[in-house]
Length: 72
Image (cartoon, rainbow, N blue to C red; front, side, top):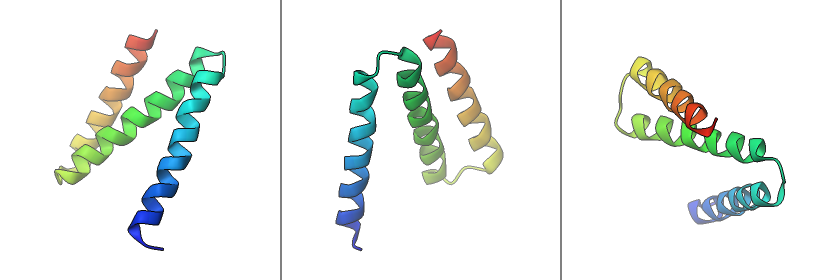
């Protein structure tokens, strides 16, 4: 499976998940999905920068804490 097909399938799955957050009436599902997206994005950002695992873990934990605090 080449890279284009993998990216297309990933985008389709992600798009379906994001669109389903708008259709569900509970805001907690929306918050959970986007909190996971935030954590994955921060993890990927630090991994691309080749940071240490400790600084990456602290950054992911801080982003989850900040997101949760701002949501509530």
